Amino acid sequence: MTHTADTRPHDSSPTTLGDAWAESAHALAAASLDYGHGCASAEEEAAWLVLHAAGLPATEADRLDIHAAQPLTERQVRQIQQITAQRIASRQPLAYLLGEAWLAGLRFTVDPRVIVPRSFIAELLDQGALDPWLVAPPQRVLDMCTGSGCLAILAALAWEDAQVDAADLSPDALAVAQINRADYALQDRVRLIASDLWSAFAALPGEGYDLVLCNPPYVPTSSMQALPEEYRHEPALALAGGVDGMDLVRRFLREAPVHLAPHGVIVLEVGNERAAFEAAFPQLPAVWLETELHLEAVCLLLADDLRAAFAAGAAA
Ligand SMILES: C[S@@+](CC[C@H](N)C(=O)[O-])C[C@H]1O[C@@H](n2cnc3c(N)ncnc32)[C@H](O)[C@@H]1O
Image (cartoon, rainbow, N blue to C red):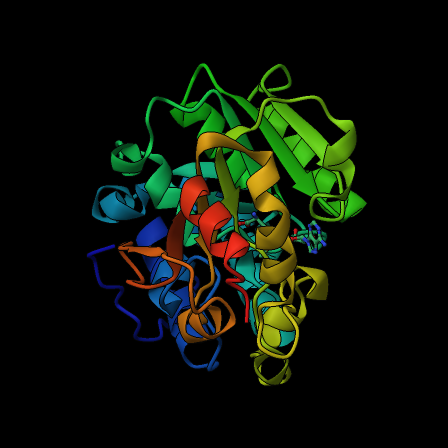
């Protein structure tokens, strides 16, 4: 978002979208909140909030100047003021207060049963970013640790012929994923699977996945204890990755080779934990993919490399 809110306090209640934005941004900025859930600043969050109240998609934040003069009803203004106050008092992510999150330009229903979608993998599922590593458009895709189902849905939309499986241990998360799958009418192409990582997969027929996406819990125990309040509203199951953050990654990668097609590819997010990943898998050749917001948060692994590395004892 390129515009700047006039965050000076106003004497009277706002009447336009632009004024309400300024008032909300001012209040949020004064409250020392954390903005790690899809927005980078008080201004961005306030923009999303006023657009939501006005019935506009968050993607319109780039054109806020066009909407700034739009009059708001008293009810809309009151809603904005109430949610702003709630955001400050409760420190809940705005996504939970609005019941929605936006990722790669798409809206997803969310509530505290799932982590707020913000995966760096999302931007790699568009515009051929993974093409250099795929032998063909993937037919069989798995989103392991799917949460709200956001990455599975983005993958299904990116590759229209693909059958996508989406697995999670949490029945709560799968219930939210089901809502999102229905919103995008993808019941025929996205299958939801309750599974502790690969445990349910032995019973499933399949020739192996061409592409496996995985944004697992990877926050190390020490960081869990220092997380800003906003993150404590999210399910700990979605975040906690054990002492070095790699508990789930170890289990996931160890068994992954048997579930991959011969030329299969894994795209794995580890956030800030590249060093922990490399310490855990010193022999594993990983390609670190550049994303807009983070240069080293996502790596790509090839099935052949995984098989060879594990045969040679890759894990530390
Ligand atoms: C970081 S969240 C990612 C959610 C979603 N893919 C996204 O990017 O927004 C991790 C997810 O892993 C799930 N999870 C945790 N432990 C798991 C396990 N052993 N097997 C499968 N899923 C697990 C959590 O329930 C959570 O939904």
